[in-house]
Length: 252
Image 1 (cartoon, rainbow, N blue to C red):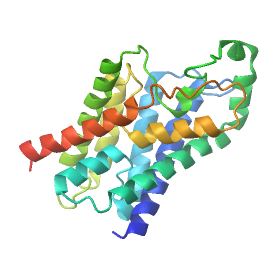
Image 2: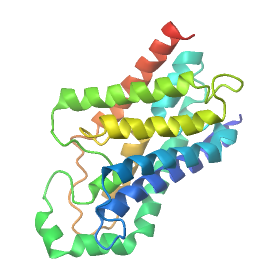
Image 3: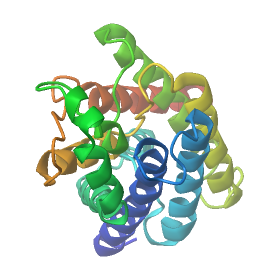
Image 4: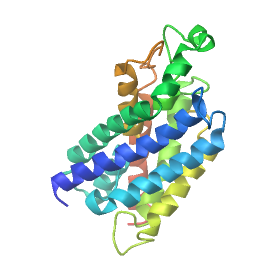
């Protein structure tokens, strides 16, 4: 794969991932959305289907990593770091594009939600704003070691599933069916491990949209919770590296 194919594939794939994943969060959260209040089950399956769609769409271009934790894990597994910067650059750009498209698609709902007197009254001066959860993750209980551990554990499950299902090695494992199985793994992680932190399990998925939240002209949007933002970046990167180590010990 050429560098241009990798960059284009990761940009498109991660944009679709965030558009559909952030879209289900917007649908469930925002006032005047037909899906408002659909709940955690809708979010978990929405993110799983987002992964499936994005992977099938771009696997032929870039291998559809769509996640710096996956890219780092594959680099550790294979010992080849040459394309890591290209992958991560595409993932970050795609995540930001996807988040911006969520804002466009739900523009009226964002305006209605953030200009409602009840919502405005609840907007904190500092910390997470009332629609930050559409863009990025946050913990239900703020406990640094627990929040970090939760992201590490969830990412180990995700990345080890990817490495062992042949998603990135043609002719091994489940081949193209790996995309479908990985989507169900994401659903499983969301249902089983998503409660404490909202399961970022992907640094680009959290950081890119968080930057967009900070930049968008959203009324009464509140803070972007930068004090927490390092956890959904560091946790998945550590988890990806651990998964690669487990793979090399147990499966290589």
